[in-house]
Image 1: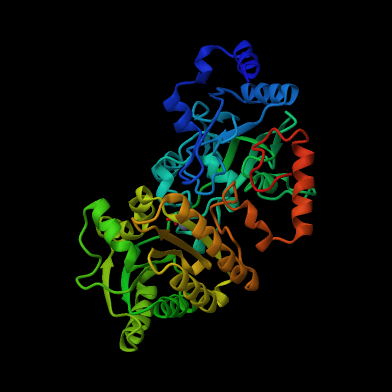
Image 2 (image 1 turned 60 degrees about the vertical axis):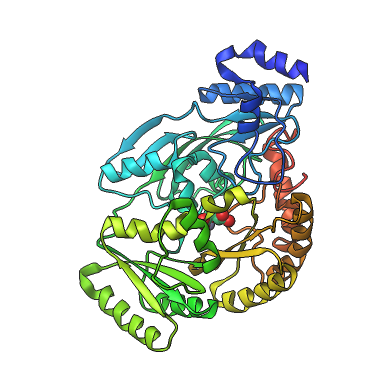
Length: 462
Ligand code: 2HG
Ligand code: ZN
């Protein structure tokens, strides 16, 4: 081990490293629970050529690199548990250019996502990727996990907004992919292989991102519902008639945590088993009429039991707070997380089957449902009771995982809709992908990273 440290220190001066125990713990992990970090050292490249040099050294001297961004991941994609060298993008955080004509921005990988959103807004545009961790996540990590969030139903995943990528492959070459082009029919688009590759093929070092015009007159309504069927009915009723900007849901079990954590009142004067949030564009009042008519029908059928309306930025923020703050509010309770998806036509049956399993197998644990139901994406978080140890809790959750993932497989769904595979989900990959597909994924890894120096052991054991 000491020789790896010597090799690195012979090639980079002290300003490139962090070695204190606190820094090793901090940079050796992401937001995932259950896997203790154990990195060898943290290195902070300042340029693409520094990254290239680190990759060359790793290939030459056979050590493993863990790319690290804002460390907000939830599947241990950025956890260094095996004495790896963590390569943090913190010092590669330059905004390189903004192109007014193309409405694109070129940035280094370490730029915080929220800063990109702010630049878009300063130019009367938006970068339409929105999730709660945007204040600390980095764009390189978002791209490496093909991040989603609350506006996917309208704008799609981050993949749709990356028009160019610069990467350093696991072999140490610099590739410039797609160069910001809108059209480029020249064979395989390697950009899309790097998006969502979780640092297993190389480093994303720069990106060109597309902005667009913002929606006009955003309106938000929070609904209270008697049960989960009512949430699904509300979502599908609106989805058939309007092109909404977002539709999210959460169970009442989430509400106490958010109230405690953010010191807010209940979302509605009375508590209901489930809540949903609809966001839409008012476009000359046309949508308002449709929404109002559908709302009245759903209210009469007792699908919606109460509502709160937001049309100014303060009330909109307040309503979204109940949904967006759930994850942060529960994080200190070490929740066990599942991030599942199916096609939205299957969501009703899928959810009911899974609910039956969790209610039967977790009689003593808190079950929290929330997520992006209009994308078919459900976050299922389980919080342990006080009388059981963390390791017993984890063991139990892993047993129940099998039952859940059998249902996922039956519905041809995904075991990880938007949080990636990392270390946490890799043993379940076969529930979502065939052995043949995994074989091709491993062959692709071998081409870009023949010596397996890039985030070894993440997604699969190649
Ligand atoms: C969200 O939608 C994030 O809030 C986090 O994807 C989900 O905490 C989670 O399980
Ligand atoms: Zn989510």
